[in-house]
Length: 455
Image (cartoon, rainbow, N blue to C red; front, side):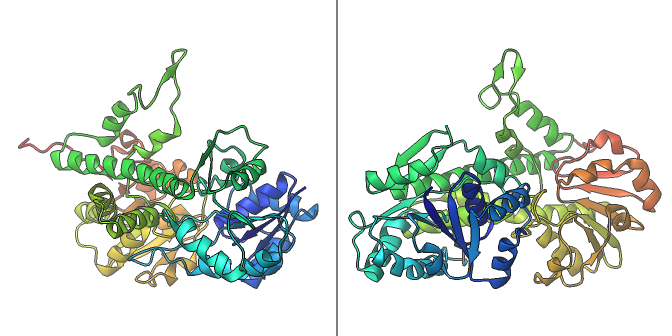
């Protein structure tokens, strides 16, 4: 079997390394954090990702996966090296410092390789990065020629946090962008186990496919939230009923043999408190920045981000509209992760909400199944308190705010809220609940306000 290396052991890198090892490849992953390396070699996932623990246990025990601290060591003897390091957005552009560092680390391997290896950029980078940054840097540092001595391909990931292992094992597409057909073919063979369609393009097109995919989904979310906000302003319109009508459009939801397919895309046409995580906010902002560097208009995407930044603040207004001034009032926040089945709080809508509540003097207590005191390290969130369960969180609270769609919150009932809260108020920032089941308490949901008498 081919020997592979993966530089970077975050959500993308570790899932890629572990799943490829599970397919029979011998994989060495590199991470400069010794604690992460130790955990991987002990078959303990350093991140929470459904199914990853089992894959790690199998592949570490059978010797197909191991971790090292040195990227140069990881690359030795490899035929293909995946670069899966972080590319954060610094407010103006994506930060390529980790990408450049990875290139410098593996350059000695390229310099000594004799089997025309391939460097695969797995990290999300703006179009032209592989061609204008990675290739020149690798050529300079290795004194080798791309296309002759080694290949460079862009192979973006389409993994959803919380479902990354399943998504890797069941891809809907495999995008490989390369300047040389032989390099593309070499990467294509890595995915021979999948029958997913392979999109073979040049590197900058592959990079754009990734950005376009995430930007489309983010746009659907912000579009739906704008419809929700208009519905709220009008009153007497429930955006949940509006989206139910949208979901029946055959172009979005085809019918086969008389049954609706209800594809996953419909989950992005639901109102809520906005998108978060490491991908959508960063990728949309990065694409806007890239467009500006080309003097290309990106007004739609700018508006997508503007709507998203403001959406958590609408939740704050719902709380204030339901219980009045916040000073001294206990408010329960249910969910801190940006989505269920992950402990990731990056760009979570709960962050601006917690900051806003604390800033107005509320006593804020939160419960999340996976997120604890580490949330308090986020600027403006230090005074947040944590409960051991949702019942402890809402007990004695003036309002309970649902921010993450964790399955265990499905057990919340009107009766229990009435028992645990003196004047129960439920603010549904994800439209997670059926409002009809909370008719005897105060229910406030994104995109819903009863019609006023003067309308």
